[in-house]
Image (cartoon, rainbow, N blue to C red):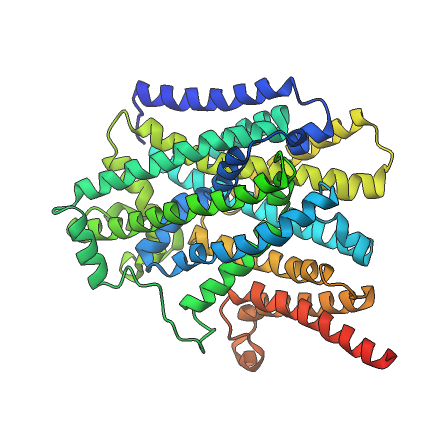
Length: 509
C-alpha cells in the first residue's frame, strides 16, 4: 500500500469536492425535466464537443488501450481511424433528424415506425449496454486506483460511484456537460504527464521506444488480409469501429440526448467533429504509452515481476505461462505506483477518476431519461406531472448508478478491460443499429421489421455463444471474430428487412 503525500491527497479531495460543488451549483437551475435532460438547449458547441470527447475517453481508454498496446500492437487503433466516417454520416443525417423530431429519447421514433415493441426492445438493449459499460469503467478505474492507493477495489467503486450519483442527480445534464469539459482537460493532461515520465525513464528517450517497438511489431495495425474475418485484422477492427461509432453517434442516448442541448443544429453537428478532432490524436497518445511501457519493460526486465505474480495469482496459473496480453492492463498502474513522483500523483489519480466519472455520469443521466420517456411515461403514467417527472429522474439516475456499481464489482478479476467491453458492446449494439437503420428507410412494414429483428437476434446469440458449445459441435461454431458480431447482426437485420419488403412489393405489384 502506498501512502499518498498530503499534497496529492489534497489535489484528489479538491477535485472530488469540485465535482460535487458543480452539481450543487446547477441544482438551483435544475427545476424541470427539460433542464435535467437537455439543459434547455443552452450549451455552446465547443463545450458539447469536449463533453462528447470526454465520454469517449473513459477509463477503458485510459487503462485498457495502453494495456492492449502493451500486450499486442496498434491493431485496436483502427477503431479510432473509423470515427471520421461515422462522424460524417452522423453530422449530415442523424443530427438534423433528431433535432427536427424534437423527441428527447432516441427511441421514440421507432414506435412511430414499427410500434411499441421496437421502442421497448431498443430501450432495454440500451439500458443493458449502459450498465455493462459503466460497470467496466468502474472496474477499470478501481484497478488503477487500487494499485495507487492500496484501497480495496469494492471500496473504491462504491466511493467513486456515490460521488458521481450526487453531482449527476443534483445538477442534471448541464452539470454532466460542464464537469466533462473539466474532466476531459484533466485526463488529457494526466496522459501527457505519464507519457513524459515513461520517455524520461528510457535509456535513450523516444528513439528506444521506436527501435524496440518496431523490432517487435508493436506498431503494427494488424493484417490487411481482406478475406480473413476470423482474426482481429485491420479490416475487422475498422468495420467494428465504424458500426460501433455509427451506433454511438446515431442512436446511443448518451449522444443523441446531447444533440438537443446545443443552441442550434449547426453547433450540434460541429460538436461531433470536435469530438473526433480531439479523440483520434489523444487515443494515439494512449497507444504510444502502451508501446513505450513495453519498451521500458525490455530495458528493465525485472520490474514487472510483481505485476506478473499478481496476474498469475488471479488466473491461478504459473508465471511462466503468462503472455504480455495477460497482464497488460496492470502495467500502467504499476508504473504510476513506482515511478510517478510525489506531487504529480494527485493529478494522475484525478485523471483516472475523470476518465471514469465523465462516462458514468452521462450514462446515468441518459439511462434515467429513457426510463422516464420510454418506460414510465409510456407504460406507467402517461400524464405524469412535472414534479413527479423530477422524482422519477432522480430515482432512476440513482438506481442506474447503484446497478452500475454492482456490475463493476462483478467484473473484478476479468482479463483485458478493452476486450471485455468491446465484446459486450458488439452484442448489445448489434441488435439495435440494424433496426434503427430500417426505421430510416421508407416503406419498411412492421411485420418485416419484426421478422428481421428476430433473425438478427438469433444470429447474434449464435455468434456470441457458439464458443461455449462442445468441441464435437465444431461444425456449427461461428468462425468469425467476436468483433464481427455487431457487423453481422446489424447487416442481418437491415438486409433481411429490405429483402422481405422487396418480396412483399413484388407480390402486390
